[in-house]
Length: 154
Image 1 (cartoon, one colour):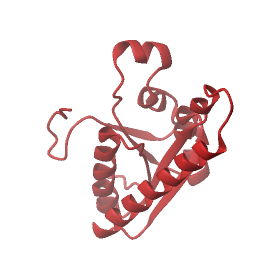
Image 2 (cartoon, rainbow, N blue to C red; image 1 turned 30 degrees about the vertical axis):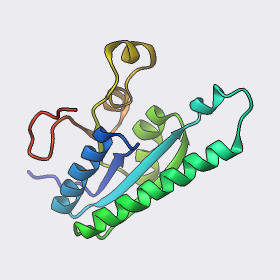
Image 3 (cartoon, rainbow, N blue to C red; image 1 turned 120 degrees about the vertical axis):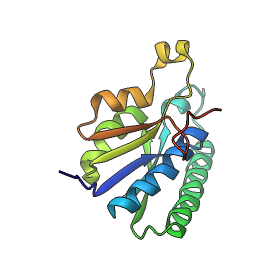
C-alpha cells in the first residue's frame, strides 16, 4: 500500500546540508501533493553565552531567518508547490523539530540534513538530526545524498 504524506516539515538553517534537504523536500512534496513547512529555529542557547543579552542581535537573527525563508518559499513556488508555509521559532532545535512542531502542525514527515558535526562535537552537544530521528513520532528522512542520490561531498 502506498502512503502519501500530507504535511512535510523541513529544517533549514543556512547550511549546505539543509539546502539539500530543502531541495529534496520540494520534490517529495510535489510527488505527494503535500503541504511543505519550512522551519528555522533560532537557538536561544547561543544568546546565553553573551554576557549582556543584545536585543539587536536577536532581531538580526530573526530578520535573516525570515529573509532566507521568504527566498525559499519563492523557490518552492517556482517549482510548482502551491502550499508552502514558513516558521521561525526560538528555543532548542532538537525538541522543537522532534516534538513540538510536528504536533502543532500535524506533520507526518520530517526532512532534515545530515549533521555537519565532527565526532567530538556530536559527543559533546549531540546531533540535531540524530535526536530528531530517535524522538520524533512521525517518519524522518535524513538527507545524505545529492539530488542524483549520489553521496554528498562537501
